[in-house]
Length: 581
Image (cartoon, rainbow, N blue to C red; front, side, top):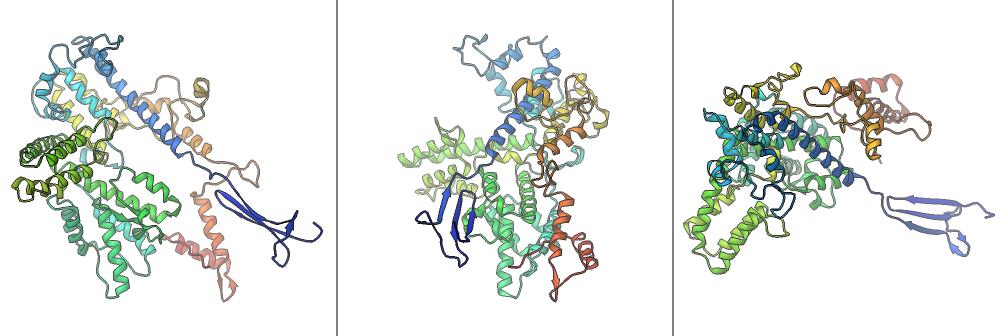
C-alpha cells in the first residue's frame, strides 16, 4: 500500500482478530474489502488427561511391585503347606470355562471351603482384628491374606507423624487456624476477618460430634469461630466467610469463591464439596483464578476435612479394623430394620426399596453403584407414605446423621493414613512372632528402623520419591519402549527394593534431572535455561521489578527505599502487590 497503515491484533486462546486502520483509526480497504476479520481454531489442550492415565499406571505398577515382594517373603513358608496357594490366587479371576484354569473349583485353601473361612471371618477386617488380638497360632496363609490387604490398600501419606505416636482423633485446629489467620489478614484486610482461637476445644468437640447432623454442627460452631462486627457490611462478609469455612470442613457444599476472596460471576462453579468424586476435576477448571493464598486456604481446609472425616471413620480408642467391623455390624442391623419396614409398604414402594438397596450395594448391570446420597434419596421417597411407623422415624434419624447402612469400602477411605495400617501390621507381627519368628525380621536399612521397625513395615511405609520417577533409567526405557518419561540416575546396578533403594539410586542426581527436564530455554537468550516462576530468584526479580514503578509525589523512589521495602516488608510477611488500573 502506498499510504501508511496500522495492523491491530487481538490474540486469544482459540482465535485471532485482526484489523487494518489508517492513522485516523479508520478501516482501510484491502483488495476491495474492509481490512478486518477473525481466524478461529481449536484451543490448545493440556496433557493432564494423558498424564493422569500414566500416573495411574505407575501407581498400580508400584503396588504390584510391593505385593510381589510380599509374596517372595512368604512363599518359602507357604509352599510346603499349600504348593498351589499362589497359583489359585493368580487364576481366581479366570472363568471356570477358561482352559488355562488348572483348578476350576478355585478356593482360597486346599483343606477347607471358602464358606468355612468366611463363617470365621466375614470380612478381611475381622481377620485382621483376630490376628491382632487372639493369642493363638494362625494359619500362615491367613496372615499372608491380611498383610496382602494392608500392603495393597496402605492409605495416604499426607500426615508425616511417626507411627508410634499417631492418633486418628488428633486434629490440630490451633496450627490450621493460625495459618489461615495469617492468610486472611492479607486477603481480607479491609474487613479484618480473623478466626477466634480461644474456644477451639469446644469447636473440635462439635466438629467430631457424630450424634448431630453436619448442618447442625455448622450452625452451632459458627458463633465460636468469629466475633460479630457492628458494621453491617463487614458483619455480612465475615459471617459468610466463617459459614463457608465450616461447611467446607464438615463436607457440606461451600462457596469457595467466598473463602478465597475471589469475585466470581458463575457462583455455581465455585460451590463444591470436598467429598465430591469430581472435586479435583472441578478445581482444575478453576485453576487459572487461584493464587497462592487461595491454594493455601483450600489445602488447609482439605486437611481439616480429612481429619474430621477420619475421626468419624475411626473413633477414638479404636483400631481401624474395629471401626470397620462396627460398620459391618451396623449395616447388618440396619438391613434387618429395612426388611421389617418393607412389609408395611405398598407394592411400588416395596420394589423401590429393594432396587435402591441392590443398586447401593452392588450396582446393576452396566450402571454405577448408588452413592450414599442417591441411596438415601430413594429410601426417603419410598418411606414417605409411612411417616408414623416407629422404624421409619428411626431410619430417617440415621439418614439425617449420615449413619444409615454404612459400607466398609467407600471413597471416604481415602482419608485413612498409612500409619493406621502400619500400626495393625506391627500388632499382627508382634502377636504372631512367637510362632513365626521370621515375621519380626528387623528392617535391613538400619537408618529407617525408627520409621519402619520391621522388614515388612517398609512395604507399607516406603514411597518412591516423586522426583525419581519410574525405576528405570532413560536409556533402558528408550531401548524397551522408545518412551521419554524416565530420568532416574543409578548408583549401582542390580534389583531395586525398598530396603536397598539408597544403595542403588542416586536421589540427588535424579532430583537434578527431574528439574532439568521440566525447564526450557529462553526465547531471547538462546541456549540459556529459564528460571521457574516459583523460584526464589525469579520471585525476587518480580517484586523488585514492580517496586521500580513505584512513585511518591510523581518521583521514583530511591534505591535505598526500594531495598528497605523489600527487606522489611516482603521478606518478613506474606504480601501481595495490587496493581492500580
